[in-house]
Amino acid sequence: MKRSEEAGYRDYVTTRMEVMRRTAYLLCRDWHLADDLVSITIGKLYRHWRRARQVAYLDAYVRRILVRTWLDEKARAWRREEPAETLPEPPMLPAEDYVVERLGLLELLDALPPRRRAAVVLRYYCDLSVEETAEILECSTGTVKSQTARGLDSLRALVAASRS
Image 1 (cartoon, rainbow, N blue to C red):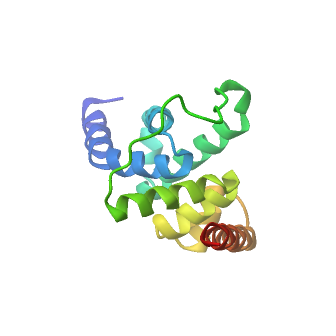
Image 2: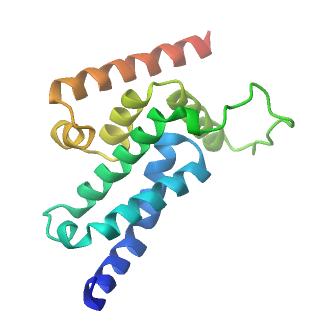
């Protein structure tokens, strides 16, 4: 890669790093894994930078790499540690309501299967259209609509169950 190309790559990655990291966290709910996913994503982006910088919507291209990387990691569950049912110490939560609500939302997202979670995050957090989400997830628009609808139904049911 030429120095001028590398400077463009470096500028793009430094300005978009935090957005990629937050999106990765919403998908996987683990900051360490989110950092790994972003690292893998920017490595793939580096290898394909000549092609990537020519695309019309670079953010969408990178988001697609990130989501596909996460879905690939979910398919390789045998490579990850198994979570324990209980933690050695209970977590200390701040008293602020918005933090508690946010943690509750993240726990609800954890209950969704990976593709439904990806559809909900891409549609409502990243504010992507059905078509953009379908392109990233490599599926039809109908699949995105059904996955999103089922994901929202599951979230509603979980909220209703937690309130009763």
